[in-house]
Length: 107
Image (cartoon, rainbow, N blue to C red):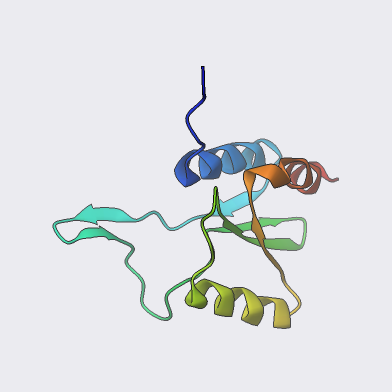
């Protein structure tokens, strides 16, 4: 039996569950379905990363992707700008689970 591929929403839920378990404060903007399709209410520049995690003076900013999904130009620009400020901003995929777990469980 072949398993269904992991969706970005399911991957996000897994990361959030572990982050909360490990004591991180978590922020994610959830899109809403409108008569015009899925929309995320944003005032400012589009493409802000999926997650902001904060604990013990550390800020992690993560964009989550699954499968062959790629960064949009707006997402790449946000990540570059955040990295230029010295923040830990990166793209993570399900194959990075060991890195995710190690980062979130660190003391």
